[in-house]
Image 1: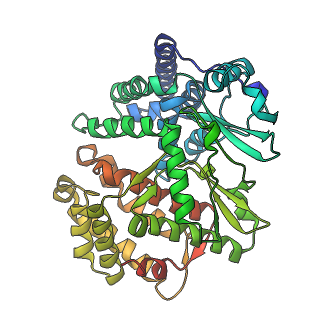
Image 2: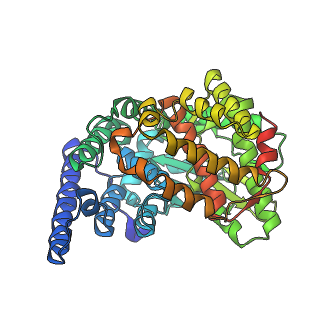
Length: 437
């Protein structure tokens, strides 16, 4: 991992220059792709020129070097894109969810000295300079305390918190200039919420408190393991916690179907409990937030920076949606989607028949598994929905952003479903949902 060590750009000018380089590279790539297509007699649209594998590589490489909010937004796009982008582009963007660039040792030493003092190594019998993982906001190291206890230490990249607002504004500017977003789509509330949430994620004192809450809430559930923070070394930019070993959750793909189903059932039940029982949800569905312990059968839960309270009114809206879906009541489901802001009135006015057809497709497919298991490996529904929704996807004037309080919950719900799809799980989905309707 040492070959991926790159200093985190901290100065505003340096980060702005990186965005300029990224924009210039994307523009040059679009021009080159346009010339090639014109030479073949094609008349490509702007979106076709921008969404190319070459441009995706340029963007992911630059975002992984910047880290911080810029990389976080790229990760969100890579996960939320789901089946909407071509497989090649989705695969390239997925690199943002894997190992990113890390801090060089000298920069790491400065960060820890700022938090714990220049003699910070006195706290440890051993500290591994090579990180276990590198993400958008920080990287994780393994260390052994003088007591002999092994700990994981999350170290925030320098300058990340200070760059959040500017990074998000710069990404928004690039999106607007790209022409990929409809001119009338108001993304200001989403940007404001993204800034607020990322500032919260950059506060490791807050994350430690959320970690304790989840550890207490799940203390009696043997299917999960949650680390505890080490308060004596806790700092706003350094989060020490119990080290809990585990393999990437994707390794469940190599286990027996029953093992896979049990693990995914546990994650679905946890998500429903977060929504309806806890009133608190960890809203970041990044697969790296889950680890699998084959020897214990437990799922290790990590990264609680994105934990958010669930407003009671929002939980009530989701409960009404569940009831309508389980009753097979398409009109009630349509009204519930509108009430929750998951679809907008302009969309119904322009594509009401298509929306009704999509609802019918979903209900028929899910209800077919009412007395058995829902097969997430079956792509029939996905392909049917994508084909039927084509008029909506191409009509940018009908695009709609849900309220921010539901948008991030939808990310979590969609992320768990995507994980079940990747692992080809077969789950008693209707039975699970019926407990909360």
